[in-house]
Amino acid sequence: MLAACHDATTMAAFQICAQIWLATLLLADGLAVASQALLASVFAKKDHYKVAVTTARVLQLAVVLGVGLTAFLAAGMWFGGSVFTSDAAVISTNHKGVLFVAGTQTINTLAFVFDGEWRGMASIRIG
Image 1: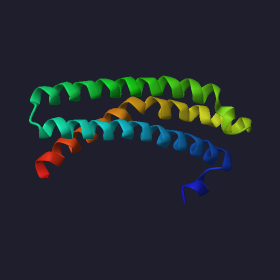
Image 2 (image 1 turned 180 degrees about the vertical axis):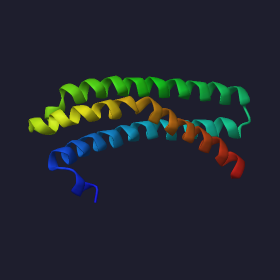
Image 3 (image 1 turned 45 degrees about the horizontal axis):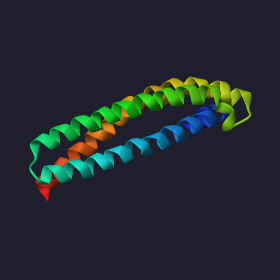
Image 4 (image 1 turned 135 degrees about the vertical axis):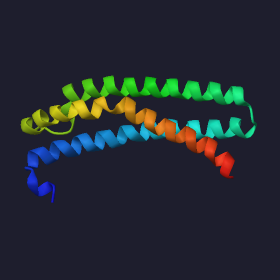
């Protein structure tokens, strides 16, 4: 239904943005899974100092990853749009999506890491 409301150029640009956004979320999820394992390990040992240090370090890494992805994607999608298509109209439309895709990386990374940390600590309480 939504695809019927837009032309092929808009939908092609949307697909490029969506696939890049989803691919970068896998990087954030990788950091979240690692933080989950680290926190579950130190939380199970009841070492509260290491829990606090690990949580802080993983959140720092999440911010660094998010900001790095924002910068990389902003430049990469703006100047490297021709990697995905040679259609000038799609590239031009894709430039509108760069703001969303690049701008949400830090927020997305933090959301995934917070979820991973919560699951890492909750798994010990439940299990």
